[in-house]
Length: 544
Image (cartoon, rainbow, N blue to C red; front, side):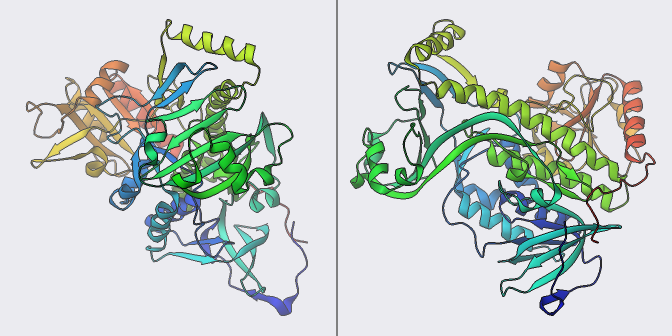
């Protein structure tokens, strides 16, 4: 894994330089670095490029991800670059509307617009500025990872500086957020599993001129035309994206050329209607790493998985990785939990990625159907699912819960799902729940329950756990928080529970119906937090 070095070209630094080395300063790496910095960990984040890529790649995010941004204090800075995602209308062989993919209705379950589009370059700039605002976070650009060697208690990383010299730094853990061709993944020997989807597409981003909007659909669209499937996405302001399937025999590099791009866009636009911002050919893959951890080295984002973009979840998955991993790594670095807690990262995120990718593949394969007879059958089946009318689904129902990992041992209602975020009235002002309780571990109690006082008393003195009883209406007890929209009350009623223990990433650890069950669940959580376990031995080869 390591190689001989020329000592005359090597800069060596002292041992244990950093708690975490983050390789890759894209959105996933920037979020990981920022969260680690907020928690006080010495973090070095590197990127081989000298600046942010100036053209858009990701275009969609959802309310779960915006909730993380808000927890980071970035909602106001990011909001100018975000707009609601319009409904996506799917059109069949004969141009008929067969399916609508929308977002859940108000009151919004997490407090934000459930589906959004955004402009990646300025949002990525906000995330980077946030990360380096912490005194214990350092960012180095134009720096490339060359090798990793696991030692006792740390990882030694060889970095190539912009001037060509190499340098050794050490970190207790390494997170590879370095993209689909991840150097970290390759060095760590983490293999990819093929989830069987491989289609060539051309992604075209445009900046429309004034007046050209009228030529385009009013909503985002999927043209499920067997002759050539096309996706159309309405981005922020005058940004529009076309994703166009390439046909057998078409050279991807040639199809990126402006003349060919405009030929493909001819059914909608001419060169006078806008400016080509980016045209890039991709193979839409479905891949996932078999294991996301090798000793003290972990991977996240595109380094760990790639999936087709048909419901815009690529970047969202990477940021879910970061938030899932950071709260666990924080506990391990602080000595509050054993190193084995990190094993739940693969268990949780891999299964979630595989399940969501399966749903995305099914949608993608439906869109990509090239056989006319099969496509007409598809159209009829989708319409039949809608009772003979246009089928309507939401993007949110496509996203699965966590199925396994650091969750309550007993399966309880809503375990592994995202906990809602109601609007709260406090001191005459309205805000969101996280702004009152913070993003750490929490116990949330149905304030309408007769057991609410005893449930709250069970949480007294637990310094790791924020506790709040919440009810709607002016009749709330003085010790309770008052919600204004009924989101949380409806959630408790729907699941038939009176309390929920919620993780820092807002996933439900478990739910309970009464004080006895809550006491048992709190004891289980404490036991699993502090279970005695020998430190996991790294499997990466040591240097010879």
